[in-house]
Image (cartoon, rainbow, N blue to C red; front, side, top):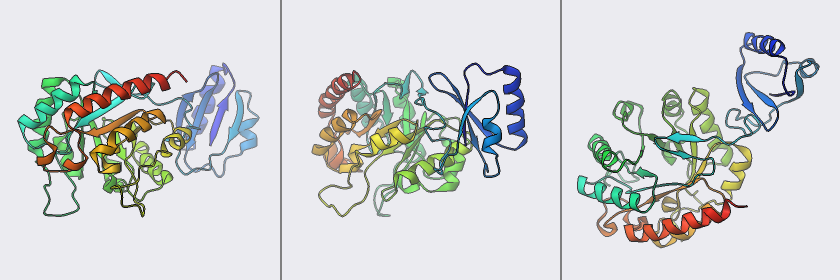
Length: 335
C-alpha cells in the first residue's frame, strides 16, 4: 500500500499516524516525490481501511500495490536510487564501467589489466575469484588467493572491487570487496540472498538465464527485505532457442526495469553474447538505451585465458570502446 501525504503535513498528526502504523507491525518505507512525501507500507495490508486513511487531513491519496515486489517498486520510491561506492557512484546520471578479467589468474595478469582499464576510464575492477562453471573439470578460480590478488590491484589502482560470492561461508573473506556479485545461477538462491541482505555492501544481482523480469525484482526484494537496499540489477542475457550467441541480450529489459523500479540497471554484454567482436556494439546499445553502466570482461591475453577468453576484450579494444561509451552517454544524457 502507498500513502501519499499532502504538502507540509502537520508534524504532530504525522507522528501520531506513523506510530499507529508501526503498532500494526508495518514496515514503513519513506521517500519523497517532487512535492509530496510518500509512505510505502510493507506487510499484510488486506485488512486496512483505505477510506479511513484517505479521510485523514494529512493524506492526499492511498493506493494498493498489486506487484509482489514492494521495496524495489518505483511506486514506493519515485526517485532513482544512487549507490555510492568509494569515490564513485552507480546511478544518478553517472556512467559506471566495471571492467576486468573473467577470472583472476596471477598477480601479473590482474595488475596489468587493472592498470589498463583504469587508464581507459573504468571506474571499478571486476574479476572472479570463485568461479561457477558448467563443467566440474573447468578452472574454478583461485578462491581466497584470487581475492588477495584483487586487493593488491585495488591498492595499486584505487579501483573498487566487484567479485562474485557463491556460498554463504565465503563471506568471511569478502571484507575488502566493495560490491558483492550474485551470479545468474544463484539469483534464486534465497538463503544466500537473505544473507547478503544483512551485509553492509552493495549487491550486484544478475538476472538468471531463464528468469523473468518480475522474478529478478523479487530476488532483489529478498535482499532488500533484510535491510540492504543498495541493489544493482544486471541484465546478462537470457537463454532462448538462438544459438548464434551464448545468450540473448534483452535490451528491452532496460526501459522496462527503469519503469518498474528505482534501482540502478547495468548490462553485461560479455556473458550475453559470448563473443568479443559483439561486445562493443551491444555495450553501446545498452548505454544508448539508458543503462546506468556496463560490466565488461577484459584480458591482456584472451587466447590463453583460463576462463571465457572468447568473450574478453583486449585492453586496446576496451580503450576504444570506453571512449565511445562516454560519448554516447554524453549525448543520451542531454535528452
